Amino acid sequence: MIATRQGRRFANAAGVATVVGLMSYALYEQYVVGLDACPLCILQRIAMMALGAVFAVAALHAPRGAGARAYAVLGALAALTGMGISGWHVRMQNLPPAEVPSCGPGFDYLVDAFGWFDGLAMIFTSSGECAVVNWTFWGLSMPAWVFVWFVALGALAVVANWSRLIR
Image 1: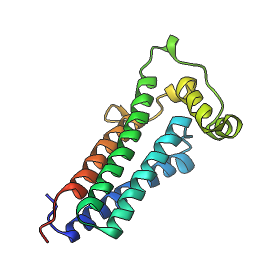
Image 2 (image 1 turned 90 degrees about the vertical axis):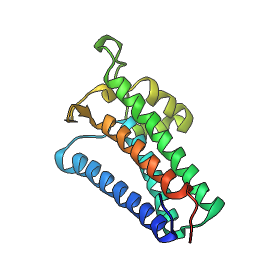
Image 3 (image 1 turned 135 degrees about the vertical axis):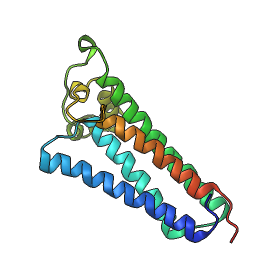
């Protein structure tokens, strides 16, 4: 349990450091190893950066009361959004081959050509490249690990910012 503002600040800073580490690894895999990010991967990165931004502002602010609870809620919402996206990605990776949708254009093209809402709808319904599993660790694909990290970081956001401070 977090009991002081300093503890709250440290827990949120740990969340920022974790998000920076995860995003650095994703960029390493993309630009050094050559593992291109599919449209769902891009959306997971956006959700992870949003969660990191909540941690960063909460670490700088370290408020008491309702302000802290607002950061807990925002962090939980960002984590739940990321869990939904990564969960959908894992679902696509586990579809039978006959049910995998055909590959579509990239994230940037979809959003530029069709706008955010139609582009997102297309990403969630017709991105066959998102079904390819080309990286695993301990038997879990990268989106599965991202899901695990969203769960852990969402819990950290709530634990770090929801509890009452004694001083």
